[in-house]
Image 1 (tube, rainbow, N blue to C red):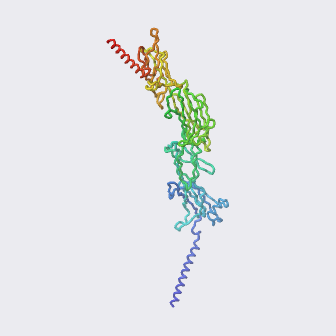
Image 2: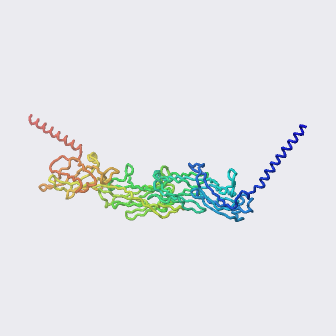
Image 3: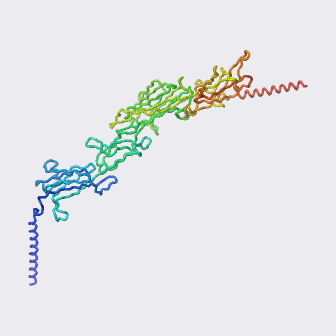
Length: 580
């Protein structure tokens, strides 16, 4: 009896459960969408676009609105209702289907809003994006309206917030001169590649190197870029073919171009001395002068179609034929090359102007040229003044993007070196100040040499001689003066005059010589020593009457001294004999 009651209870439970299920199903069947969706209403779709930023010093979690994204929505028909978003979008792009569409672009807030939309299912596609977007989002489907997040009502104004992964690149470029010092004021242009063509990128400021020689570019979107130098400083070689190309991508966001050298070539002129090379040198008139020109060679010398040296000599100088020699050298190495006339360079000499024109390809791999040649003073020399030699370098200073010269040239300022030689003018007079002619002199560089009879010689190894004229002028020309490196106006040297034959005078019909000078006469040679008006006038006085000559030196004086003693002794002996 008890088992029967249990079976009845289970049966009742099943009936109640079935009834509950039927009631539930009945409610579902009766609650259709027509009962809850208002087909008289319109819907809207708001899309807020954010970016996940990737790049140097960027926070990828930052929600930053993304401007410039175009969204297109397509109203689906019944034929496409069961397809996936990818399938539908492919059919649209392949023009297999044509659907009603609307497009809007996000503004600075990253937002677009499609309004007054018919209810139904839509395909949403991102049809255009800024270059910094590494990849667009996949198309997706959305129903309008859609249930609210809590499932309690239908939402006719739907908002979605898709995100794009964006990439930004930073570039740093540094510009130096040949001495590795920062070069300020060099202007570059940033270009972006569109298909096969390059165009100027619309950057918000002029790309000019700062005091550190740097350009810093930030927030470049994904793309293929290049930097081209478009303006440099005066005299520096502008090489547009030195292009710096880079590609901003998710895996490459930071670029550095260090130590880009701008070259400004220089040239200098010097004179060879016993102690090296100087800008200002005093020499004897008859000595040959060896000049040296030092000129920079550009590292891109083969791209330059113009590279020549102009050398202008003073009227007082003559070029010594065939004395020119040219060596190209790589600094700090043993690499050097003797350049060959007519093969590597040509020389044109027009009066005092010399032009040395180089074949630029012959200089590739070297960074300096040394040109030497010799000159000698001529009759146009200016005594006590600078006899200058000027040199300048002319070269191509602009190279096109394709590496060819654009025929623009730059000429350096002239570099000047000078040689000088002196003139000495003194007066020969008697004690009354009357000019004396016929006095003959040698000249020595030191008092010791004067006493030893070591005198300045000419090119024939003969002692330089000067003879006083009717005005008493004693003139030596072509005397070296001043230390190496000291200018013609500032330099000076001491010399010593030795009179080796005195002038004559007539006394009662007899021709007699004035007394020779007893010691060397110290004189100074400088820029004014040859000018009687401006120079320090030195008057050398000769006297009449007996005076022991200086000529013969110490031995002569000794013999005279001994002779005097012997004469005295002889007189004393005679006196003793007379007394006996």
